Length: 237
Image (tube, rainbow, N blue to C red):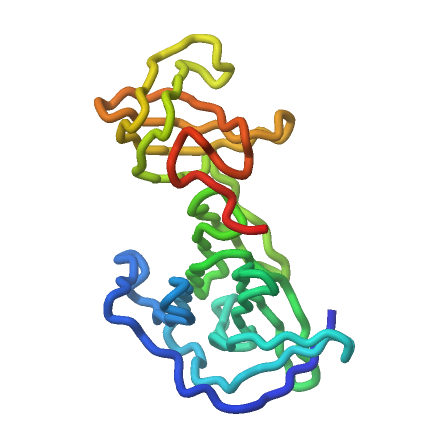
């Protein structure tokens, strides 16, 4: 898809919040606070171009969307800053980072990543996070090479949600839910450690840690909002 870029009024500047800490393993990157209220963050390689004007994207002169420019970055480690990163809040609170390949003649859309935070290394690896259009704060890994993007699959999705039960739940020894491990009472503190999406069953299975340290599997029956565990819900349309 070819996209034409129209530059308009200059931004007053992308600010840096002192209250938002950069992860220690990425302290060599520049932190950009795109929207502090939404906790929209981008970490980009040092040397990236971040003083950018407002950008209006026009697709075939029929659809236009005002986006926030974030940086022009090097994704391939060759010191060529020829990838434009912008942020779009989406039509209905759908936060997305979008990437464009820029040259002297054209600016072409490459891909987008739905997330609230993005970390970009100049070796092509990207890390995304955020509770947006998903059931929990989902962390994902991507590798960009040869103008294409692939996701690096993980054994499980880390959840790390310290919360409580809203109703009594039963946790099991196995993911087939045949052997009961324990019953966790209502209003008990728990931690949701990992999640596993089962495409065939179209359901989430979560590994739950009880307040006394028991680990057991629990299945979410409603894939939009849990009535049993606080904080598990689909954040989106």
